[in-house]
Length: 532
Image 1 (tube, rainbow, N blue to C red):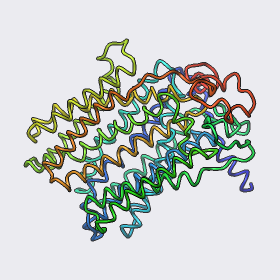
Image 2: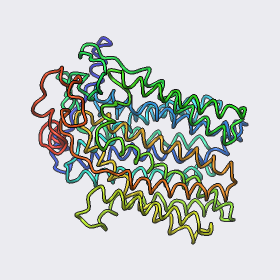
Image 3: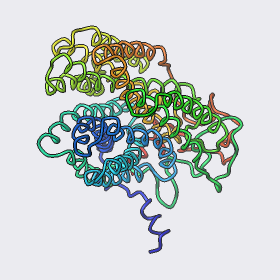
């Protein structure tokens, strides 16, 4: 077998066993498989903070260097989520998702064997590649693989899996470091990844049919995402990946986070903060210019400018910023007030625990006729109230438990409903790209949450700085209420908000299943996916 045939066979998605594909509840098995990847990614993102002291002792490095074990992961994740979304639309979401488990497991094994801090940082960057392959497809696999009436619940279960990973990370990390070694924080991922590969192979429906091309993605590359006006038109025979856009995105996010890290104590000259912020601004402007001209942009302006998508991505970023900041600030405030580390960890766990409960069953306490917009706004309001109470009440376990529960419950209402609004506004043929951009916003919010929390504590001290950041977060949550907008379902590229003279007009007329949205029967909707 030559290399071309081997590659083609490797990228061909296999159908599920008939017994599984024919079961009327098979879509929940697919949701469970997606939740496994969501859980693993968030577990790994939250567990690392508990390993910093052990890594510093083992490698003889300071905190400013050790924190890049986390920041490298987040930076690569932010940079790759959108490009991997493009790749998934072309190659197949199931193939890329299963490959993500393989990359993540192998890099976790290497991280535990790392002989130096910077080798460990490199392994964490490779881990982020695997995480991007999973996360860029998670929302799309859920949104396009379940019936419309179950989408909100499915997205809520996925968000709950993320919350559970966030909640268990600190506790699991502490236990492994104390009773085993820091290496096991990474090695514990290996069996989970192996299980994910097997589950994905047998439980996920096909998103491509192999040699005949995609079942839900048009064969013409330019039709994947509607292009903005003025973008260069390309034919299906000349695809080109937007490498300059990816490099500019990586440079802009790295410069911003490095500036925040330097302001938080990274041993670089003081003037470096200003230079890095200017570099971040310049690279961002260059990125906007590049994306407007690119034939296949990383950030897809034609999709970002769709009514409801841009504001929804901002709300997604805000939501995960609100979720992650208290996970960093809570232990600092509580231990500074004399609460033990173990007790502080248990108290802070209330936030993601309430988030997980609200994301799955909490919506049942609201009126059934409430729209996703109403759920978003009520959730953001509850999050603002909880964070404000956390900021003003005494730093004790009994005092802050209720505010953390309120904030977590509000975020559990906000994020699943917001994700549903975004995915409803995204055309069916762009689902993986849209899902990747949602997850990119989530990762950027998580990275900013870590960086801004450390910055606030560094500049104003643990107590004063932490409370100031919490008050600011409450104000940001109020802004999320104003940003939430209703969206209309996007079943085709020729609706308002898209360029009617873009590449979609140059290709063949798409009719039938390719024009169907996720709530329609047929190959483009969940009925077609479940049949495979």
